[in-house]
Amino acid sequence: MSDSSVAVLREPTVSVLARPHFAEPAHLPVHWTGEATDGERLAEYAGRLCHMSQGNQAGRSTREYLENIKKQGHGSVLEHATYSLLLEGVSRSLTHDLVRHRVGFAYSQVSSRYVDEDDIRFVMPPAVIGDESLEAAWIAQMAPVLENRAALIDQLMARYRWIDDKVQRRKVAREAAQSMMPSSTEARIVVTGNARAWRTMLELCAGETTDLELRRLAIAVLRVLQAEAPGFFGDFEVYQAGDRREAARAKYHKV
Image 1 (tube, helix red, strand yellow):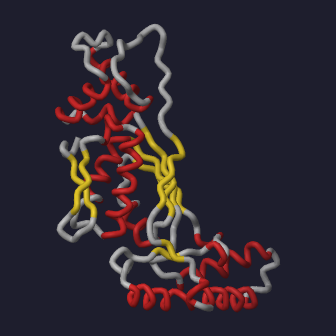
Image 2 (cartoon, helix red, strand yellow):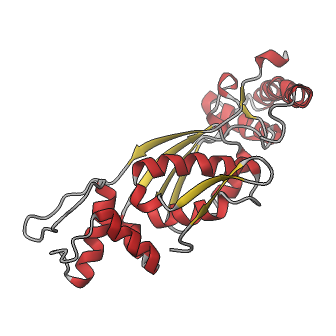
Image 3 (tube, helix red, strand yellow):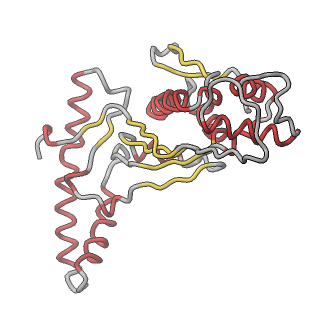
């Protein structure tokens, strides 16, 4: 199999699948001011219910209210707003780290048993990207992987020909052959998390000491979520770190 036939990904893609929808009850409305998304309104509504302050005597906008919530560290109201993201162009190595963030998250990841050879892609490590010789050497290592996997699947299909159900026989073959796949194999994943959980993940994963691929993903997720709900994520700042790569930090920690 030639190097040119290897599908290589050099950056992640983040797609929003679901966002909050807020339906205010007519019998207990809030006096709203300022622009806000449904998720931000939902969090403010939950917070105001705690003190029955729907009248908004201070005249705060939703984002001013949420800024104070973050400043005071009263992040529980952020848990009402959830966002579901499709992450593509991320490696199996990355998802092993990502799913360690359990509280407030749900994950659904592609199973390589069901992925055809034509759909398998590899994620190039950020440290390799941009150096022609390093990229060529890395791709050369990936090139034989699919060919070897296909050959092993054929051998296993022959060995287990006594399994009448061909679909089941192929599952048996693929689950054994997937052990040959490198950790750079793409692993698409759907992640749902509440705003507080996303903040915690971003604070831990967008910093300078984080694995470069995970850090790159965290920055991409941050930009998407800042566009979705600046009241929740607007205090994060993206900056150029000492290693000449982007990192991010939050003004309010452990909200």
